Image (cartoon, one colour):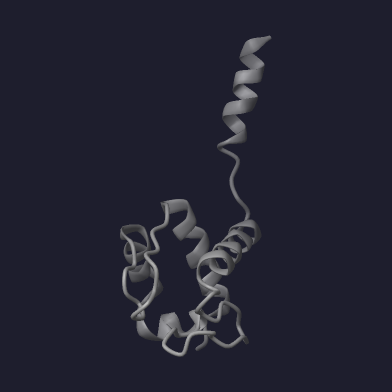
Length: 104
């Protein structure tokens, strides 16, 4: 009886995340960590004058280059920006979200 439960538990953590779930998680991460300063949707305005909208980050940096910065920790995007350091999973979700809102 224990073996099926262990297999079920193990597969629960290996279930692939849908693209929509990944984007939703990324939006949640942006809203929680970035929205006090940055615009985090496709149309809102940044609350901090020196914080660029998240949708414009791809204009400044290739999104794949941001992956390393997010994992290692961004320390000074704007002068009073708090340290932001994310796990690989959080970065994957955040980049998936940013990909959906970036401006051309």
